[in-house]
Amino acid sequence: MNEIIYLNGSLMPANQARISALDYGFLYGLGLFETMRAYDGEVFRLDRHLSRLALSAETLGLSTGTLDLRKAIMTTLQANKLSNARVRITISAGEGGMVPDPTSCAEPTVLIVAGYYQPYPEQTYEKGFRAILSSIRRNSQSLLSRIKSANYLESILARQEAKVAGVDEALFLNERGLLAEASMSNVFLITDGILRTPGPESGILPGITRETILELAPKLGIKTFEQDILPDELFQAQEAFLTNSLIEIIPLTHVNRKSIASGKPGPITQQLLSAYRETVRVHPVLDTGMNE
Image (cartoon, rainbow, N blue to C red):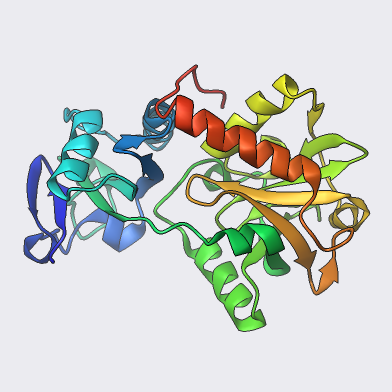
């Protein structure tokens, strides 16, 4: 079955979609994207994702056009008859001149794709992820570290490192040697019952799931801190986990072949995962504002 995609205001079969060879997203990575998860036909925290996209577009001087993105996303899900899905929206500067000049791009390119999402089996959540420390460093001073840019090369290279090493993820340190994030997820540690995660100043993309966890934890009586974290602190923690919109919360049990605590998922991680899934079930489109 050929999936239906949304391109610049129209629905069409994916094999009929055409984007200009002079699109600046393709030529220069001048674009942004958001990856979201739909549950029972509703995208969780869609408003948050669209708010982050709009703020990032403003930062880069990109236009998001005049299209109703919320309606476009829901239309794409419906056209593909999807209920539980992975959804990606990509916006680029659009077609421009051969000499790099964003002002030559008249209209943005807006692409939405959606496909069935098969979550990891529960056994994965029971054993957790294994990771390595990537040889690539995040630049905490870079504008790109705080936005979901189409220039995604560092994360792709880190994922390749993880694949070669036979593990699930790669963790970035920043230029100061501090823990930043994983290639496609945020990272949390639990030390003495306190939830800790690198702050935006460490060179991270503040994820929507990360934000949700920081809202849920205090309601469960868990103290939280956004702070600088040294890589050795991973091995002093009682628990660790990774978050993004697709995986939700997955325990992190090993880094560089060394176990974190017992090498098994911990009770606070499991408590937060249960609370997160309950939030998804009760409030699939919960929106209380963005914290950037």
